[in-house]
Image 1: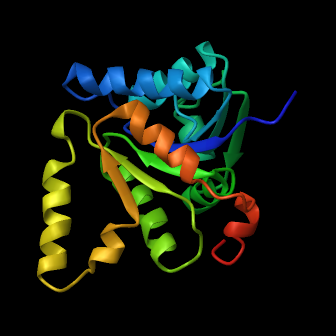
Image 2 (image 1 turned 135 degrees about the vertical axis):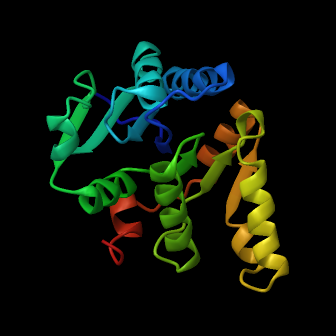
Length: 197
């Protein structure tokens, strides 16, 4: 089997949320990845937006790499249809493997797990541990208040504009995905993260 055209790590909710746009954008991202011969790297679950995203990627012909802690497998949350399903001991190993396997990162709507993963890869980028693009898809204004808060952190002197510039946010799904994939570097993911794992 030929190597995927790109590998995109997507963070998103294990619930679908209340607005239908959230489910639709997860399916749209999955289709976009699969139709372009790409690979999805994600948290390995079958629930919520995670499951919709993985199923859409697979249905469109893409590869799906799921990474899930064994505690969640025991709760029967694992997506057994993944092209590769890696069962790891804990969340630290999960996030490290996901980051290793990715060329770029994207956050869709989600809860505290999505936020934690997004902020971690953003922090790693500002510290120079990797130089991979980080994106935030602001579907139905979901991240409006978060972006306003982050800008207030800049105006309050706790962040700088250059840190904000390390994240690309947008509402146009295909345009943001294309920008992330085109911006992804040529350095291998393992090399880019060797100092942080």
